[in-house]
Amino acid sequence: MISTELILPCGAILKNRLVKSAMTERISNTKFEPTKGHERLYKDWSDTGAGLMITGNVVIDRKHLESAGNVCFDSENMLPKISSWAKASTSNGNHVWVQISHSGRQTNRFSTGRPLAPSKVKLKKMRLFGKPRAMTEEDIQDVIKGFVKAAKLAKEGGFTGVQIHAAHGYLLNQFLSPKTNIRADQWGGSIENRSRLLLTIIRQVRNEVGTDFPIAVKLNSADFQRGGFTEKESIEVVKMLDEEKIDLLEISGGTYEKLAFFLMNEEGVVIKESTKKREAYFIDFAKKVRAISKMPVMITGGFRSYDFCNEVLENGEVDLIGMGRPFITNRNDMSAFLNGELPNLENFVLRTGIKQFDDAAEGGFYARQLIRFSKGKKLKTNMNPLWCAMFLIIYEFRKAMAKKLG
Image (cartoon, rainbow, N blue to C red; front, side):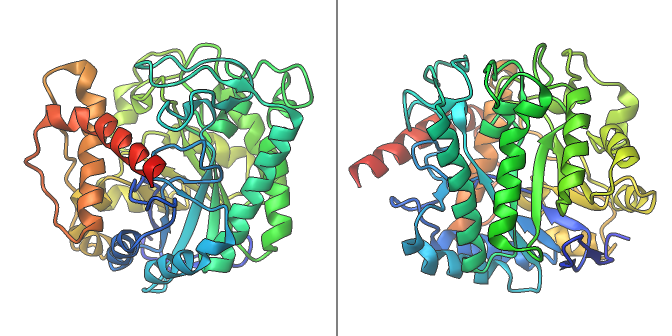
């Protein structure tokens, strides 16, 4: 089943059901443009045979970065570089979609000390984030235009679709959450109002790119925080998205404040072992989506065995299998896995011995691998965990300074 094609609602065809999900590359140049490193990285991933690849965060506003190494699609002048990236990425008849995002209050201080957000609710984590400024109506309209322009550039540059990022605590997720959106106007209050920005962006992007260009949405099943975006509200948003006839819903969860989202429910309670043993972290929520929606569904997180991937596809629990880190640690094995020649992928775990540093260590480890791959280097597993834990802050600072000086 994983090797069968999928016809999307817009008519586009994916050659198989395996997806390289979004992972931040952090390798843009000083002008926020794609580089030869992007081309090398995505050409190698295209060679794995995956039917779809989704880029890491491509931001719409260079003042609101998820990482100092983000690409920003905001100018026609970068179309030649966008086109080169797209051409290398689609070299094996696969789709490549651009993940479009705005970080909102999750923009770190290296980019801006006063990030935009729905409301003045500060992200308190390692003192890396400034107090946000509540967005005006003009700010909101600029964000809508930014998403539309980024989608337009993605299509003109040769990418085959876009994914609108409304998960993981970024700006659109901030509008959806009652914890970060305490507005009293048409953009806040009820779940219908909190969904307005996401739905408006989808409609205007559709008007720009046409009916035959795939539009996907990445949505949290929940934020896993008290007072945040809940599973019940997520189901209501799914119903609205179903009416919009988007081409793919990717289910995820969590924010910067709750990184270990795949281990917790929204009340902070560890999920049951039976769910974890089934590999796919969001499979139970996917079933609830199936009961109310006709959209193609994808989940990312936990898939490691060939038989289980086929089981959930054949059962109709999902339509696509999303994987992230295996495309780093098992990059050279993905073709064999897709063909059924490799039954299981390794689950690489990095630990520092200090629980508070483990998330940062894993994040740093995988970020370093992507940077190595972009330079044509191979996987290196014997990295110092504590150095990996410090890597991202040091790298972000250096990258941000280089762009300001450049």
